[in-house]
Image 1 (tube, rainbow, N blue to C red):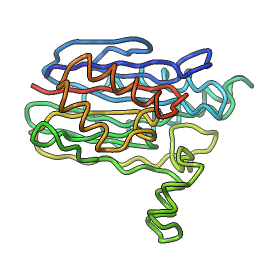
Image 2: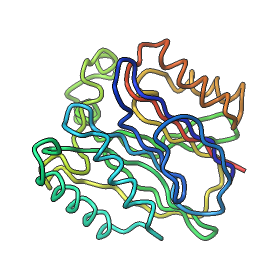
Image 3: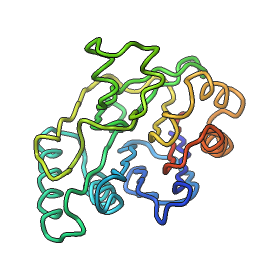
Image 4: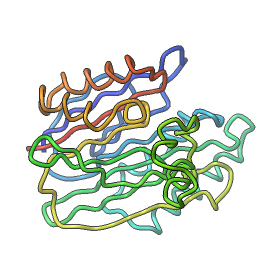
Length: 240
């Protein structure tokens, strides 16, 4: 699979708390272009409201890229190790990260997600289908009918998450893992610095114009910036 990824630190931020995982590689800045036959594709987004977001995302990324498959037990162990690390210094106290991605091979694909980074399928080379569900307060309020879709558009805490790795509390770890047949469509993975600021139509238009290219990644980040994103922004696109 052809893989193109890009990540950029947020405006006025001192460091990028996002990490992109491509196979055994971890990308913390800039553009990345490669091809892989199988392995993990994911984005970890360190929680900026907590201490050491970049430490948390890099720690989880390092652990994830060594795996040969995805199991609940493995993920729970990574979360436990992160919680232990967070207790070793005041600076790391409460550090947290989201994580969403896939592990793919010729036989099957495993989808995993905790938090609000997203995995999409690109159907017919132009229609995005979100595969993951956001673990956010907004999504909970919408799902339970406490907030209407119209009011949801104006909700001012869109990036407030309800699940993560770490966070100083093991109860915050709630991961979704599913297995399906091998991938039949290109994929896209984004951090909330992109998808919280662009509509599906806007993202589809960019992909339709530029395809699976570095230009698409660059334009997606630029478009999010124009819509007001000051957060770290990361995107991975992949396909044959």
